[in-house]
Image 1 (tube, rainbow, N blue to C red):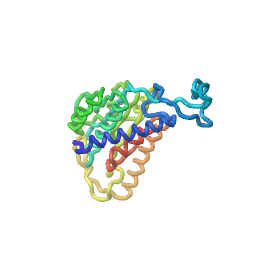
Image 2 (cartoon, one colour):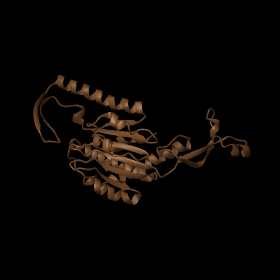
Image 3 (cartoon, rainbow, N blue to C red):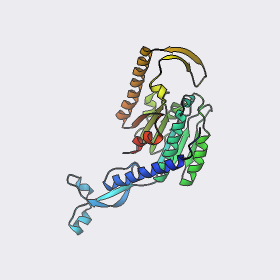
Image 4 (cartoon, rainbow, N blue to C red):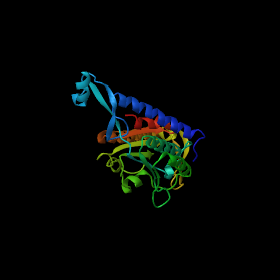
Length: 279
């Protein structure tokens, strides 16, 4: 798995675009992606209908004009990104792991730019335990890219191995993978208590729309092969079941106040990732 020659520049541009939008939201008095803990950033004129508790009464007394305090989120958050590197992530090209690693790297860049400490955690794969990459400052990002490029899709343990064993000691928790293993309840239990949860589910185009005809199903985790005749009724049943599964994840996210976005690996990471970060 390799990043493209312009990948770092794309991440920088993506982070800069989000930062500009965040500044615009804060100037309009809206919440930003950086979570709880606010500090004063300036003033703007009061708009009719706004909560009067937001008025700066001292400034009003001096100027005889209503102004609202504009706040921005403090730095110092902790972001964690759980990354699925199980064998099922090797479907492609581009592989699901490729897109997941791109998103993890971009999230790290965005988080560092916002002043957060970022921890990337890879599922166990073929190993016994997960591995992690901790980024505390911008200088750590290049080394993180190098480590991510060495990751392979292998083994059976995916995101479920993380949400069942890892401690989510963070303010924002992202899960990036195909979400094909584990019970949704084990994932959504991590939402709340001051933590925000967001999942990005990557699927290959052929997983959305299988082709009719003779095919060989290959289990990426075991290598077992199964010849099969794919006809239109089978595709219809598969697509119905997949739609129900994706709806299940979306409904669970809505019910728990989390975010869940589904994307095809035919899309670029910027388009898929932006909905998780733009409040």
